[in-house]
Structures are given as structure tokens and as C-alpha cells.
Length: 262
Image 1: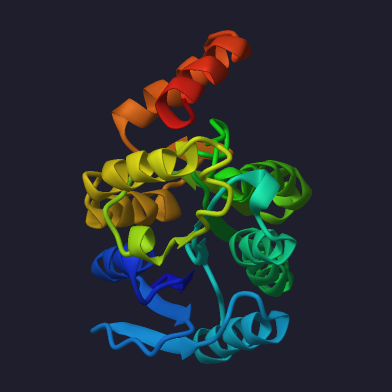
Image 2 (image 1 turned 180 degrees about the horizontal axis):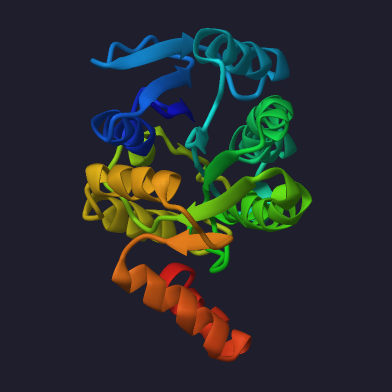
């Protein structure tokens, strides 16, 4: 039986990924700050921004199961607001959870995966990584960082039987929307464009993909024999990412402006 550790497994796509892996016959541990009682999933309390918490969580899995086959990093949240008016501490918090949370977790798992000679690392990124969204700049930065991190990490750990993939969802209907930390500062100076942009984002999210679809996708990627450096969830978003590569960057940037910043 394979063993998996899922971060952010108490809600959203993390919870759905944990359940989907469980349903595929995997022994699943999930780590989150909130207590969680998901049938067939072992809860570990911890915060991804804490190196000590992540080290303890991985060690607990290793002691109980003797191995860690799969690591799925789902923990994250979003902030919104204009770059000019975003407090530096808010930006640091965004990167600390979304990006360094992945770093802390992967760093804790790598020594065990390297010694055992196998492992699959799956990190949740976003289509907002390659296609940066205005007024959600630091969220986009955190996800772009995950893409670069995973791409480089793959080649570092390739000789040890470890593979890594960044999974890029688009809009998903979860509690992520309500949990977003929104700053309206500067909306008057920016002619109401901040509030309009955030309203557009939230409308798209509230009408987005069911999180169970994303959870099953993550489970499938976790168990596939071979994976690329990045995978996108959903045909529409795959098309967006492909067009972002094919079309002139100036044109793509203008389209994003029309949708999210005009």
C-alpha cells in the first residue's frame, strides 16, 4: 500500500485530494492547522510555515509506515490589492504560506525519499502562475515561484527515483474565495479598478470547477507512472496556458488587462 501526506487537507482541493487518494487504496495522512475528522484519513496538526511542524509530520509518517511514497502540497490562500498599496508584511505572508510552505514540506520529505530511492512530489500551483493576474500580483508570484521551483527540483532529484510536478488549476469553487484577504486600499486612486477586478475573480471562482474534480486529478497525477514538470486541470485552462506560450506576450498581457484590470 502506498503512503501519502497531503498539506492543507482539511478543506478545499486538499481535502478532496486526500479523499480521492484514500479511495484509490492509499494510506493518507493530512496536515493542517485546523482539526479535521475525515474518515479513513489520519489528521496531523501543523502549520506549513513551520519547518519544525513539517519535519515532525513527515517523521510521524515514516515511523508509522516506514516510507513516504507521495507528497501533495495543497496548503495556500490568496490576497488581493494593488501592488502600490499592499503592505510588505501581507506580501511576505502570501509567499511564506504558498511558496515557502511547499519548500518546508519538500525539504522535510526529501531525505527520506532520497534514501528510499523513490517518491512523487505534487505541488498545487495555478494558471495564475504563467498568466499573472493584476491586483492578485503576489498570489501570481507565489504560484510562478512554485512552477520554477518544481522544474528545477526535478533535475536535482532525478537520479534518486523522485519525480515532481506542479499542478495548475484554474477557477475552483471552494472556501478559498471567502478566505481571500482583500485590501481595498487605493481603489479610489485606481478609479474603482481594484474592486471591479476582485469582483470578476470572485464571480469566476464561485462558478468554477467542483473541488472534487481537482482532487481526483491530483490523485491521478500522484499515482501516474510518469509526469511532466507541470500539468493543467481542465481543457479550457490547458488552452489558455497553451495560447500564453504561442501568442505574443504583449497581446496576452493586453487581453488580461481587458478582463481583469480595465
